[in-house]
Structures are given as C-alpha cells and as structure tokens.
Image (tube, rainbow, N blue to C red; front, side):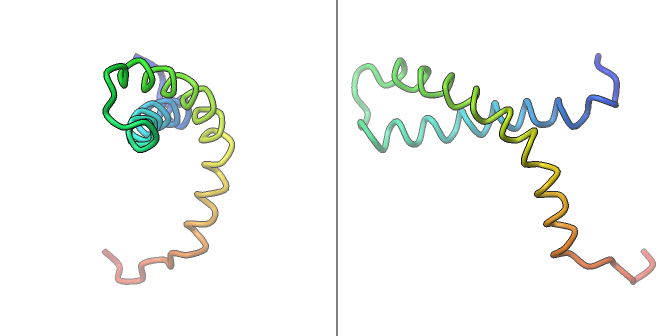
Length: 79
C-alpha cells in the first residue's frame, strides 16, 4: 500500500484511467460505429487519451478545487 501523502496523485491516476476509458470508448463508437475492430480502435484511443488525461488532471485539479471553493459557501448550520 502507498502512503496517504500520495492520495492526490493516486486519485488523479484512477480518475484519468476511468474517464479516459469511458470517453475514448464513447467517442470511438460515435466516430466509427460498432465496426468489427472497434476494440483495437478503442484501446489505441484509450492509451493515447490516458497519456494526455493523467498529467492534465494533475495540473488542473488544484485549479478546480479553488473554483469549487469559490462557488460553494461554508455550511453555518453547526453540523
């Protein structure tokens, strides 16, 4: 197991893995349809998408956290 100090990096890895998987599959099917070699097309697209998605999430996530903090207000209910 990894130390908790790597939480943000591990989260980014799995988020990139899952999201690039889903999006590359949907976009591949949208672009070429359910052709006989869709798995090969999708796996190539997924590999490329993941290589872009992982560093993008690592760089962008701190910015998104700040934007979320600006949009959300503190809960003053005392719960």
